[in-house]
Length: 491
View 1 (cartoon, rainbow, N blue to C red):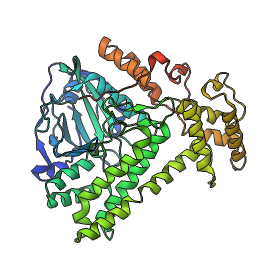
View 2: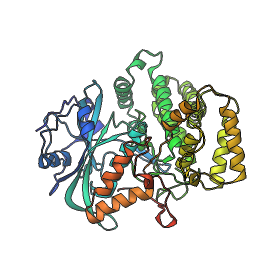
View 3: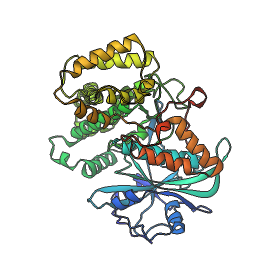
View 4: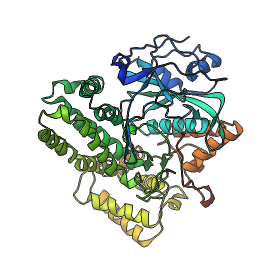
């Protein structure tokens, strides 16, 4: 039995913060994937752990010593509609571990059985969504985007019933915490000011201890969470990621990406792109993500009003002033990242217009977002050496004109072409989890118990900025018959 360095602070909060219960055992757990690099970072010695014991451990059949399992309570706005009680309906927080660097991490089982928050659900997870979360979260981490991580994936040996019976699975998820905007909403809706203050103080102590000495720690908390979220959403936009379900229960206080349900990466550039099968009106379309983040943060601000000031009008004024800054903060993060993608180290006033005109051309010509920026990374070094490089660029006079403008702008930079191109290749990935490739890998795993495509794709995505021999097909956009138009929630 491996030793987990548990130090469970969330479990010490009052009982109304969650419900203590053990995971529900599964019939025949089998280990699919174990992230040994992450385990080592967490200080978990799993080298001597055999597959059978690992499967029991990461399915919930074997609860490690020192764990204090609980289902966390939270609420949330789902597609704009408030649900006063959501909570961990199919997840159990085993506890918190301290890693080798002294950092604190939650370890959570997802798909571990019914809880008091299950709302008539079965509390289980299907294999496809478990592998999708493992795949996408690993890719996001490799892309340098704050995210929850997958430690292990285990099949349960039991079916789950959605539209059809599907093989069941359990995911072990790691996060710096699972505190969400919806966690604050759960207590604010109940007018439990004591719990809101306890939660705010806990979040500050866990994530932002420097804020304790701020003149108003709670306005500082709102400001800091807003900055983290603005930075996160900008990073999503830089790589064409669409979360798909930006409900307030899917936005963390830590600024990590969480809950990879109907998410996807954009192929052809279009800000109206939607992949979620349940987003009928495009609320969470690619281009709407900054606006929705600000809306969600306004809901967070509402929960903090009693802490911001004793007088409600003054509290509202403080909150409004902070939330109104979001657009400028986001624009700064977004523009900084887009400059890097185009090799612009020196800021100039006309840069945004240059960037916007490129995006308009990409949308007009239905060009592939990822491949165009990767191609520009090569062009920035000099004449293209790849014989098929132009396959990724719109062959039109207006795009040629844009290239001339961009080259003129690059001539004003101080870096050498080689330095510039190398810097661009560090931020413009060659590989993303393309939807059709992900679906092919998941389909083989679910239907044929063939995990080879999943393993191969995962290996490529772990080095997204390095072009790998024999992997050109992972860069290619889908053919018309391969396009994925919808992704689905695992519940």
